[in-house]
Length: 145
Image (cartoon, rainbow, N blue to C red; front, side):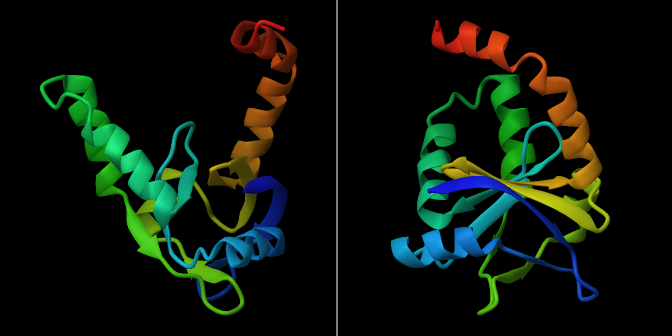
């Protein structure tokens, strides 16, 4: 549903705009509400409300007696907030999530099929630079190409 890489800046009022391609996909699918939370690699994860429920069920099925499960769930769910973009596709990212992802103003918003990731522009550049050289090796290890 969500694909591509888009650069956007947070405006003076602290709002970020959802890329138009994502807004179009949402309109076609009837998506109006999202959940955003702490992601991995210092980005913010953004899920449609339906996908959020799917992820929530997966995590609820994990044993809470394991320390790793408790720690992950605490970080993931305590950071969560629901957002409804306005008519122009703008929404506010809470300060604690911007701080977590080191976002100041310039962002890169990427589509990862069932979720959106919001990155600080410099953090994304660094991640991309470090990962692009090993893309083929990662594909070979994961996909047995």
